[in-house]
Image 1 (cartoon, rainbow, N blue to C red):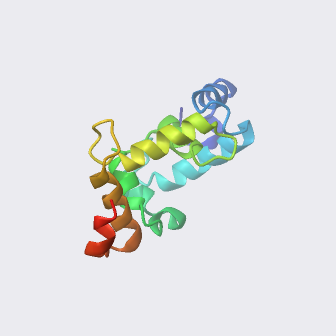
Image 2: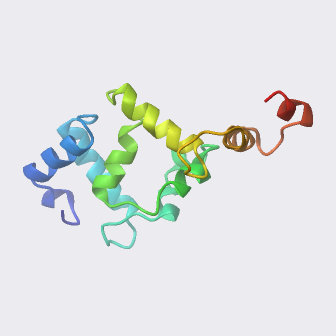
Length: 136
């Protein structure tokens, strides 16, 4: 895939659409491709975590740092796959797997009390009382 939307072929679009399990239409994929290259300031076909934070809707999300830890950076196909979990057309299984990865902060395949506590800290700005911790 090239550096401009004109270099996105029909084959590329169909491949990406299949990769994201049809969560986006072909036109949406073209729009995402254009947005991807706006974010890719270095023009290398790769978006770093810092570049991803330049998206205002993402930067204000209280879980943005946790989401960034899930990413090492993204090429276009990975960018679309990541965003597909937020699509209303994404299947329930895809959404569940995504949110599980968000909650499983230590990547051990389990969502533990500690993982949930970490999420709550992220969402509440680090403030959870001792009494609230003991509820678990």
